[in-house]
Image (tube, rainbow, N blue to C red; front, side, top):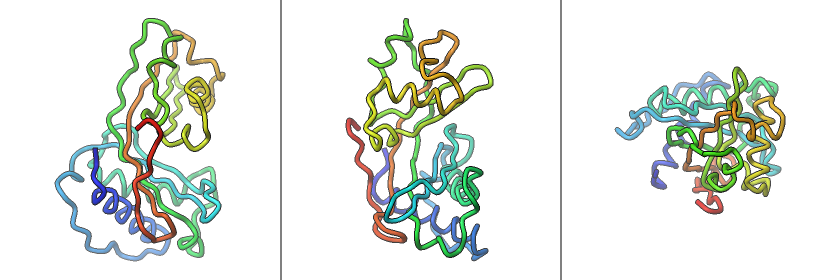
Length: 200
């Protein structure tokens, strides 16, 4: 569980990394606490303001890097999300920055795939679906924002992986869950708040 001050720092670090990636400005002198030097997964999401349409989202679900590095790399990557044109300097003050600080993914154990909806909690869990070379991830805030129930969340994660919506019922499909603390700017470069997720 990350505190409010951790979220403010994480967003500040992501925002500075975005500015550097787009404008080439040097990173400000940001003091990195020990907690941010521990390996942790993280995602950085950019959304247009005020419409809140996705503008870029890149991150690392696994704790491959120290949290600070995961945030910096995720932020830089979000400015060049291959689904969108590269973020322009003129857009910097027209997007809000959101960070998701993640727990390590854990394999979901169920005797029968039909039990997954009883185990997965909307508003608490993020999901990773894996089948062979197919893999998809959705962050914990996504089903809340779209108003999905658990089965819809499972199906949409399968679609994200390039699978059929009911692939979560296939015994060959492996599911992982993780949790996250989500913090975001209320306005571009504005106040940072924790996003409350139903059920979290």
